[in-house]
Length: 109
Image (cartoon, rainbow, N blue to C red):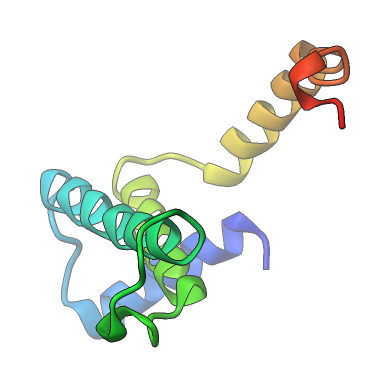
């Protein structure tokens, strides 16, 4: 699914199940919370912290999907065409960073 259709699907879900969008500030707080949940899993599963027994069943994919959902909500309610913005960002990064990472000695094996 492309981002445009994902935005439409989220908007449909909000209208059918969510009553209305939370305001932008509430969604920003939710996004921060969801990113925190992703960070917790990454830090404990892939970092140096030990994973608590209560965290072992946490699904990283589900938490990442929560982040995407809230980002799509924010894009919808602020009138952002996320597909257009993403495509422009990829174009910019491709031009700007074409040789940057290949010449970074820190990334050489």
